[in-house]
Length: 136
Image: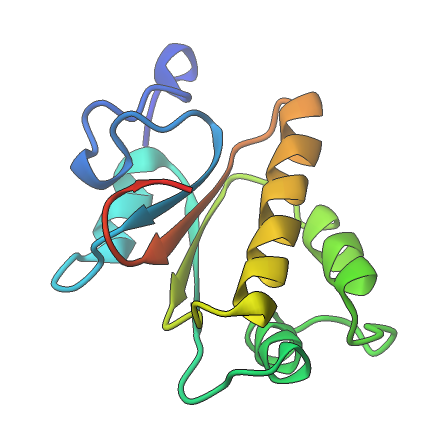
């Protein structure tokens, strides 16, 4: 676990190097031990897989199932924001197979908005999208 002074410094964790404490970025995740990465960074790992889902409603339903959203989850982007913002922070969310279409882009925009929310609360919230390295 990282010490208090280095809790926002991920330079010792190659997958997260160069990311701030609230980030959304594309990274190659194949062959990466994400549990070990999360452990080194002192983060809880949450992985979401999107096998053969393409519509916004399918994406939202998969996220809700995986993250065990409450029954009041409305299945829309506003409700996604609300449920993600209710997380405690201190998490690394890995998105596997997020489609590169309008629905995937809209969902990713919500994750970015939630990262900004956590920045104002000084809580760590990192999202890595399986794909080509770079910032999203």
